[in-house]
Image 1 (cartoon, rainbow, N blue to C red):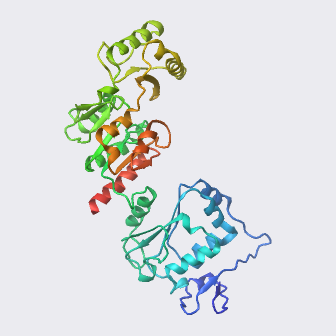
Image 2: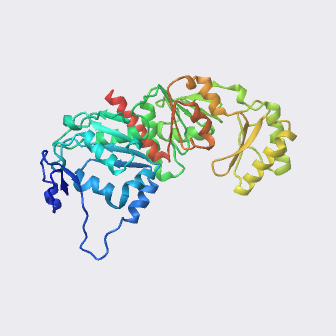
Image 3: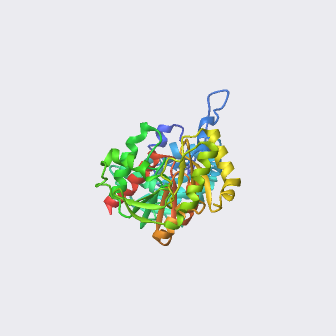
Length: 401
C-alpha cells in the first residue's frame, strides 16, 4: 500500500493496522513471487455475469474491498452487469481507512472507474457520523441496522438489502395482489411447507387479494389441507374460476359475469368436443353461463392440437369468437373468454387506482404480464421459496411499523 506522504507498506497485516488519519492510504501495488502472475478467477467473473444482485458489503477497504474491485479490472465486469447493485457502508471506521469519510470512499472508487450511478447506497443510521450518510445525491437509503462493536444486526442488514432489491424500501403498498400457482402454492410437493408459510403470511397482511386463473375447487382442496374444509380461519379473498368469481372463506361473494361464457355457446362447444373428439369437459356445462370449459387429462400433443385448432378455426365455426383456448397446468386446456380476466379483476376492485403491489411468477411475460403492468409495482418471483422471502420482508415491516 502507498500513503499520501509516500510511505510504502509492504505487509497486509500492517495495512489493516495502519490507523493513521494524517497519512491515509491512497493506492495499492500487486506483486507475485510466481513466474506466472495470478489472474482473475473465471468463476468469479461468471458469477458476476449471472448475478441478479451484487452487494459491495462491509469490510476493510484497502485490504479487501478495493483490491477486489481493482485487481484485473474486476470492476469493469460489475459495470457491465445488469444485476441490482447495492453498496453497504461500514458501521465504524476500520484501521486501514481511519478518518476516511463516506464521500471519500465514493471518490476513490469513482476514480477507479466503478459506475457508482448503478448502485443503491445503504447507510446505517447507527454508524459513526462519518459513515452515516453522503453529501452526494446518489440513490441512497438510511436505515437503522444496529452497531454492536462495529457490526450490523445480520437480520436487519439482510432485510434492508432485500427491501432495496425488491423495490420495497421506498414503497409501501395499500393493497397486495398475488398469483396462486407457482407463486403461493408449488407444483413440487417437497415445497408445500413454503405454501403453508406463504398462506399464513397473507392471512397476517391486510388488504390482500389472490387472483388465479385456476378453478376454485382445485384451490380449495389445497387450502383445506391447511385450514380445514370450511376455511373459517382463512380470510384472504380468492378470485378463481378463470379469475371471474370471488370466494371468501369458501363462499361466492362477487363475480364479473361479463367474463362468463354464454350458456348456449358453452353447450355447443361441449357437444362439439364430445361428439367429434370424444373429449368431455370435467366441469358442469348444461346450458347455464359458465366461467370456463375445462378439458383434461390431455397429452401435450393433444393440448397443442386442441389449442391451435380452437383458436384458429373452431371458435369462429361454433359462433364463439370472443373465447379462446389456453393450456393450463400440465394436462389441461381451458376455454375462456378472450378478455383478460386478471386485468378485469383489477379494474373491478379499483386496484389500478391504488398503490398496488402485484406478485407473480409470470410478470415479465405470460399470464401476469398485463395485470402486473397495471399495478404500481410488481415483483417477479421465481417460485414459492422466493415468495416466502418477499412476504417475510413485508410482514416484518408491518411488525416494526
